[in-house]
Image (cartoon, rainbow, N blue to C red; front, side, top):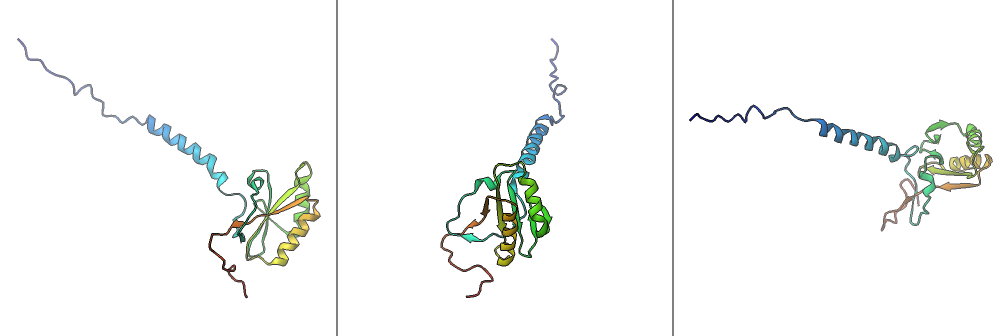
Length: 151
């Protein structure tokens, strides 16, 4: 009788199968590519905080016309920096083929009131039906005036 020799070690593969890892990484890449453009819409500004804001879900749409005013009085139409005098013409061009003539305005809470009024006036001069003023929800229990306000 002969001795039986087991040859299990030659059948074992020590190579790492990276195909499942590549599949997972591609799925994650696609998810991040889809989600990233949705994270921020327009120019970031520190909007005024109010107790009872009105929901304006249409402002989050990709084709919404959004005007932003920063604290240092810069005006952006979408993500493009514009001069206030050019704003009326740019909005007229965008409104030419649209039935919904609503423009959303988000202004920094420290922007000068007169500057915001001038921008709203130029927006209205373009033939806009409605101007939506975007605000943030005030945190509960917070009754302090905005920073920089004098009593």
